[in-house]
Length: 169
Image 1: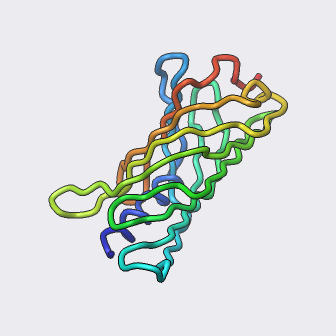
Image 2: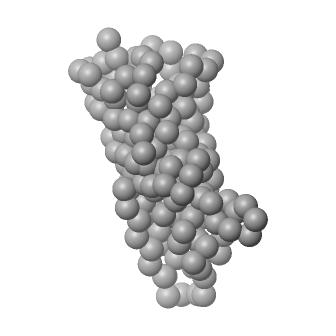
């Protein structure tokens, strides 16, 4: 139980530390994030099952999306060391643009090293429900995502199938 709680805290913290775009293939974007907060509640219907909510912030440090920000809230249901997204929404802010992404499906799991929780890995699909201005090309698009822990308070988020035209002007 403590291991899961630490993993969730690590996942959220990773979202807050900063968002860094790394030059990759045109259809891939990678960001560093810091976890702002976490909340964990037992469901009460069976032992080891919890609802975990995470708040995170990401900031693009360089590249085409320099100074863009992502803020997000994610809610997962956990059974022991495995989780499943119930709801998740991200708001993307860039110069002259805004977009809203919603997770359609996703799973997460605890990552351990030397029998110690180091964070959470996740994967799934997200759809952009709204986009305008310099981010208008994201509107209606679906992308795949993965996350992996970087440190106790940071995680890396990577999107694939990112539309090439979705760059702020």
